[in-house]
Image (tube, rainbow, N blue to C red; front, side, top):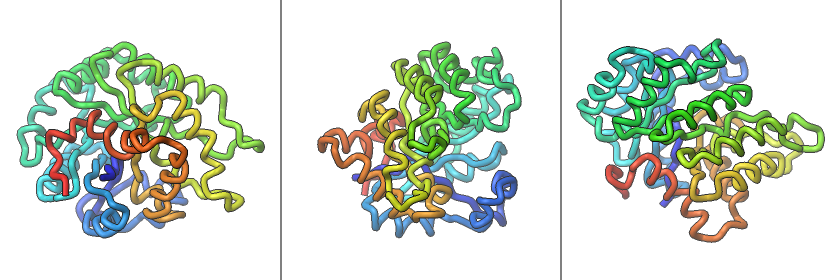
Amino acid sequence: MTVDAHHHVWDLSVRDQPWLRSQPELAPLLRNFLLSDLEPEADAEGVTATVVVQTVIEPGETPELLALAQASDLIAGVVGWVDLEAPEVADAIAALQDLPGGHLLAGIRHPLMIEPDPDWLARPTVLRGLAAVAEAGLCFDVVAMPEQLRGVVLAARTTPQLTFVLDHLGNPEIGGAADGAVDESWARDIGDFAALPNTVAKLSGFLGEPAPDGTHVEHIRPHYEVALASFRPERLMFGSDWPVSTLDIGYGGVHAAARSLTAGLSAPERVAIFSYTARRAYGLSATARWR
């Protein structure tokens, strides 16, 4: 059983996705991507459960995702959004959990890239919000750029009761060095983050990076090796980042890349990456309707 621990859905007739309009290379994504589009592709790849992740910082999206998950045999968890700095953040989370599908709320995410303050995660109001996320039994998904990882490490260290899930390995620059070497500061920050017991990471996002010379996965292998050495399989999980990361190689191509990278692992280690870590971190074993 494969768990796809990171994908999105959107219907532009219901809610705009402004972030797609700010990056010309994402223009092909300016159309609807519905669960019905993903289902046959997931079935073809042996995916039995997924985690759908928020895309916009609007309070209306998360209830829609919860309702979608409630009606789905595929979605086993939802990573939604709340205003972490709001005084009533705990009440907002509780209200989401009381909605139809609320028992499938697995985590909260806030896109750090939109915050001009590099110390946003260290704000007392944000730390109070993160504590409320932990109190509600949820994870906090981190989507950040490499230069923001130091702040992420500090927040995870300050909030040990909360599990931090690092999306896309912190969005490292792929192919930035001519010899394929990874950025040393990124690798250092990944190591410091992984050294904390309340952290896990997703092999997502970078899996869809096209190879400039047709070498399939060799251009991303150095970043995978850093993640593997830092987290080990028991704290890594696979995520397709559909549809964003499938633009160049397709959904099947993302799965093929992940399988190729992990081919040298033992069977139990592959089970951890493709199922167990996500089930444990997000608590999916208690809620998933496994097919």
